[in-house]
Length: 363
Image 1 (spheres, rainbow, N blue to C red):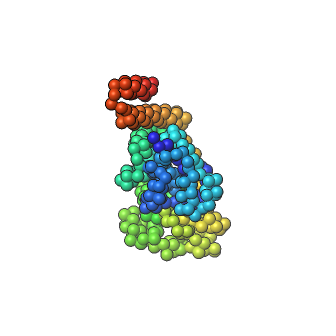
Image 2: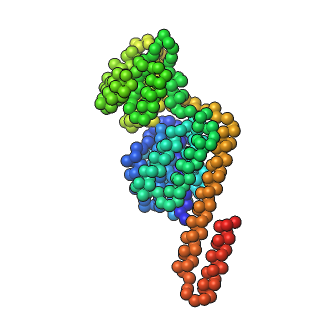
């Protein structure tokens, strides 16, 4: 059996300046997995704003080929990347994937988005036939574990989402009726717009690199559409900016977009990874810039919910361990049968060895 291997670059270990350079869309993930086919039997990549994780099966427990590949892909030296990645093997990999699916490795404990993201990465790997049998089974276990945690515990209800944190930091008030600008038209931006309108906010603007998509969302949410080139105009009368774009190329909101003479307070919440907003804007007196790193997502989940989720993961991990043992036994028995001679003595010896293997699996 090829050993399980994990290489991770996550929010709890890597500075944002490095992590924002390690971002991959679905096409880039597929390209990386194809490049790894010379040394990996199977691979799955989970890439989100908070984490870039490789789950792989290898002929040998050696992370060096993956570190070298990722360093080349993202423009790092292997020494720099090695200093920041987390590597683990075997059952630790399985346990970690189950914890990720359940939301126990998230900044917001129990947050629901990560389960959908992991499921998407798993289904993409299946469609491309990149996983192999062990990762396929582990992915099924993780997705099932995540569903059980959300169905059988209160962890998800307590965890909330990153949008909850962001919206809680927006200016509010009956008299103020703040104008909120949303940058982006992806899933995170759409979720924010749904939540904003559900709470009665109507003074909205949507900014996008794609003016047509911005216009469609503006029509849906009774807002005003702006092209990215018109960012300065969109922000001129704004009280808040919620930046949710996944654009990989540099800052979308720069120092030129906000006048140095501005006196009207502007709260900017940057949920982008890579960052959407030039961090130097935090020095402007009228600007209150809150980056994703500052949205300290300490879960309010009770200890009982965490304990219940952990018990479910232990159960699912035991099931996966049993599956691995049965698979290993079946492969060993098949190999013994293929190698056995046809004489009676060899068949008796083979029978004894198969009996011992079955006993070990049953133990």
